[in-house]
Length: 356
Image 1 (tube, rainbow, N blue to C red):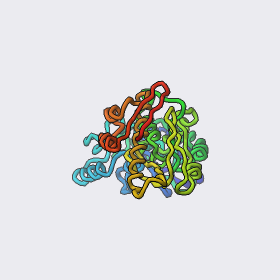
Image 2: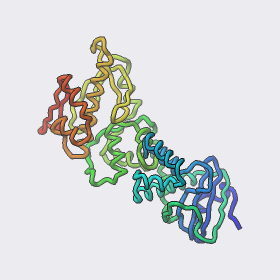
Image 3: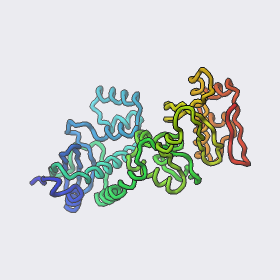
Image 4: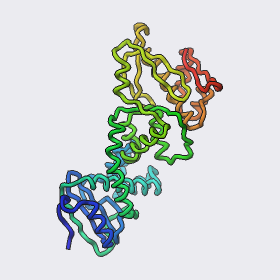
């Protein structure tokens, strides 16, 4: 006999614990504003993707939401999907977009995020359809212990409020703090999040391109701020300091970087390393576009130097060194040379200067 009812009477945690303790096999469907499925084999969670359903694949939604692939890659995935009977997991593996280890991590992360979201739900219906043997149609099977899944989901529910209080705005940015981590101590996900933070990307974009759950990205950033690895920059205080056009302010650059006086004509541009804020000087002459271009180049170099220091543990000796290491585009060298600007490193004072 199928197990079914209202989530207001029997919540997701209780249902999952029951299925695990009784070692059930089958499909648990949640019918809410966000339909979900949890697939069990003898009490172990093995998938959250039901290929029999016509609704959007939760794996695809997860990959798109967190910036795993660019638009060109998605077009290629769609082309292969339309011209074959392959599942999305099979396409990603066969086309070299993921390896087995990464696929396993992503699918487990998806399950964790769904459990986190499902435990918040108090409205909707649940319906469990048992199967005698292993549920059919599962293309990529993993094994997740339900107790561990629920414990982590409960932790996230407890800490969600603190994360929202600490990071209330998607426009918050970050800069290097007083403590520098060794990149070798970080896994691929943590290093990716750290590099985006040091590049000056706002929180919202870090989440959208983080290649991990929103909670994980925000939790990492909060912990690094509390440990002094990063410092957060609240957008409200930055806007208040900038004031009206023409007012001067200083952009503080951490870890030995000199403070650069920059003046205002506030413009937001999408640089090669993220959203960057520039200000144009009132005495810049009749060409504000040239002033903006120079500010962009300066900030790209500063951001590249921060990334280099984070990855290598020291400031770069030259612009060429940053190009060799991949932090800076080669075209910047030509532009800097045309401007007559110089990069100079002062190792004793642990800082550099850059400009004309």
